[in-house]
Amino acid sequence: MASDLDFSPPEVPEPTFLENLLRYGLFLGAIFQLICVLAIIVPIPKSHEVDSSFITMQEAEPSEPRGAEVTKKPKAAVPSANKRPKKETKKKR
Image (cartoon, rainbow, N blue to C red; front, side, top):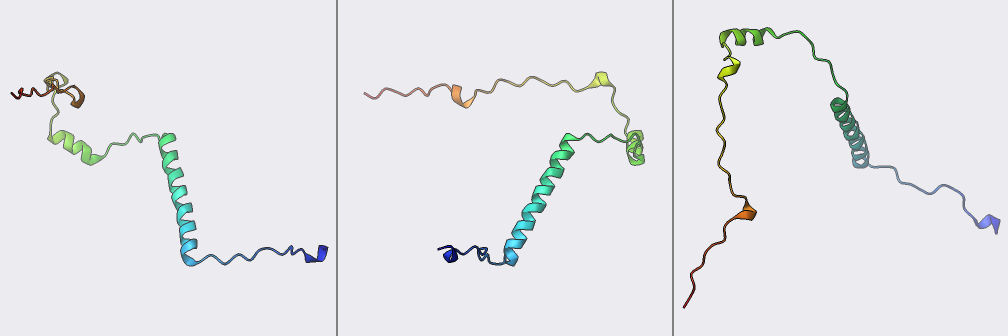
């Protein structure tokens, strides 16, 4: 009875090129996502150097004083889709 059992490993076919491509593509995608999440979480100190092209643009166009900001007009209340007035229908006689 003990000689009837087969303890050899099961035959697993070699992965094809497309399976390997999919596997490594998923690994690269996961690494990219981790890098993106870490870029959001970990703050990067900003450099204090100022770009020279930015300075020349500021000199060419003088900025307006803070008091002369454009005042925004309040928009009229737009009725939402849920609160539309009901259509009045004429009575049929």
